[in-house]
Image (cartoon, rainbow, N blue to C red; front, side):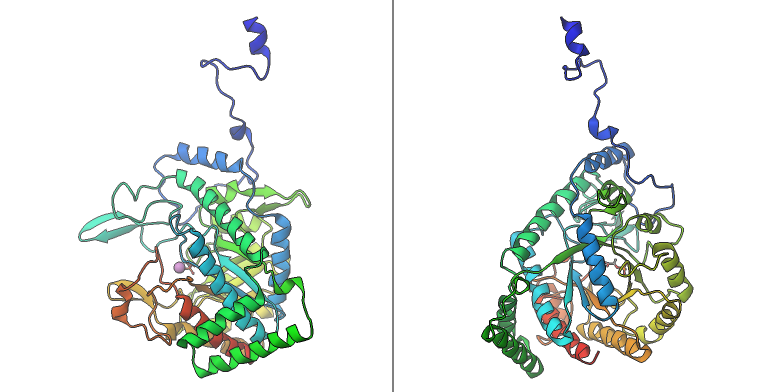
Length: 466
Ligand code: PEP
Ligand code: CO
């Protein structure tokens, strides 16, 4: 009797027999070569990391491959100047920060910026959040020292804790499962808000009128807001009503940094039989991990998502061309975005040779300006950025593309919907002593709600001339 039972596949297995774990039987979708991977945590327990990777491999994808293709088509439109790319969100999302209020405020900020930019550019704005997955950070130093005590640097909630204690700073692979869960919950709310009526165009414009009324704006913005107001009233008067006025697409993106996590969420698309990294719609490689022979370039070369690479001021034209060769050998429209982050003082010299050579090569990349990462300074004991430098870099970006006859295709910013005090300057005149008032970022300083809208109004003026 006992014998017959154990012969059945669903029989209870005795403790002596090995337990067959179905998840661990799942083969990896990407059998990656063993290449050097920069900026990886020193995981103390590799077996625990492997087990987590297996576990995540058994979970559903976060996005659908066809969505990634739709975004790729929109990136291609932005590269041609037929759309404008707006990408923004936290430098580092945190598990604790994924509250309904914070997600709503970020979304609201992006939508408010998008209304202004859409009107100014007279083309669709492609809205991409640094959201629902932006939990891992590259660091310039592996260690952090405070008052003579050195501990491993914080690498994002995906890896370790922000608290400056030895226990909190130990990399813990279980956090990757929490990245997945927090991303899923965030994405779920984003989808509900953007499809469920929160993202109504008229509503976003009403918020902007509030911003103008509350003195957040100068006369120049008031005039632009007034024009948008008349355009919306006109739409209403002629009875123009269309689902696109009530709903938006908000795409997700993050830096593809942790190889095991990205690999675990890479799946074969049932329509095409090709791999997509389903952790987000759009993935980018950072300035510190774009080595041509490294694991990050190899990983993104294999997946079919639209992808980006950050390019800092030391990038040579040959580096850019080699990245195109590796990541977009077919020259697929919308496939590759170059996010330049040169610094306000360098963009006017550093960007033209890159754009010239890339354009001459026949590649059609989307050029996006990140005016944040080249403009970080230390002040009052914290990292900050001057609003003036941020605006100046965007100006330089538009100037360079205008001079070369190429397309300034978009903007990539670190922002939050909250009234934090992390960047100095802007119409409210935030100054260095104000930084202590509400400095909350887990990593780099973000534009607050008002500074983000101000930037949108200023970029609107530049776009008007595009
Ligand atoms: C970032 O976008 O937060 C970042 C680290 O950027 P970069 O790779 O350009 O330094
Ligand atoms: Co950052």
